[in-house]
Image 1 (tube, one colour):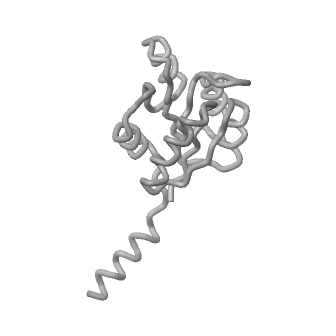
Image 2 (spheres, helix red, strand yellow):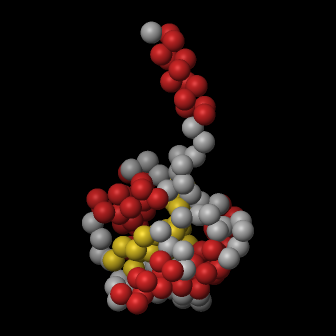
Length: 138
């Protein structure tokens, strides 16, 4: 099961996004500010981070810079989920290493499509072996 870190200081956003992801089969963890986001990314090594830009303690751009400059977190895909929608903000986020930029509010369909397109794929060797065994049994 892929693990997603949702970073947003607004409780309602965390709950709505988290429930959508859990219903889709993802394991979800949360951070409420930029400092906690960097710490949790290092602690839990998520398969994807959904990151707001307006955060207390450390804004999303600084979080993104910190994540992409650390060898232990640089390969974690990051999708920005923010109410900021100026072209400059989008371009800055992409240039800092974000894989995608979604503007709040976004539909559940768009959110899940972006997550599924960018989440790191876990090793599937065990699953392939099980499929092969099942095919041989038939």
